[in-house]
Amino acid sequence: MGWHVEMEFLEDDTHTRAVALVRLPDATEVRAHGHASRHESDSNQPRVGEEIAGARALNELAMQLLSKAHGEIDAQSGRHSHPINV
Image 1 (spheres, rainbow, N blue to C red):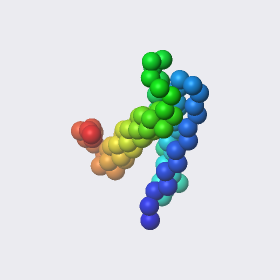
Image 2 (cartoon, helix red, strand yellow; image 1 turned 135 degrees about the horizontal axis):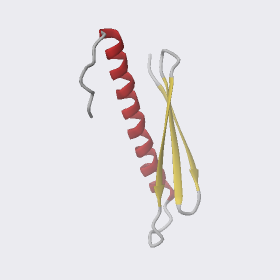
Image 3 (cartoon, one colour; image 1 turned 180 degrees about the vertical axis):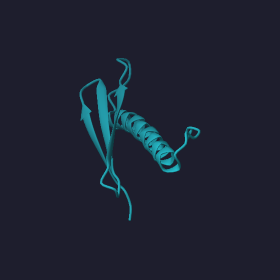
Image 4 (cartoon, helix red, strand yellow; image 1 turned 120 degrees about the vertical axis):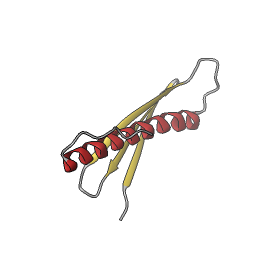
């Protein structure tokens, strides 16, 4: 069993936005966003914008999953635990 992760991009000449979505085995979906902006002096390299925006979305997704796991630990144990840090 694994996780299914989807990544979508919206782009224009200077901005790239990414949306990352993971579907977990318990039918939970977690969604996160990332963005990148091209400086006017940089050449237009859409793949680089996707890599940056995608990495930022995946980083946010990771933080949300850590927070979700932390909440589940607290709910199961009945006590307040230390936050999970990256």
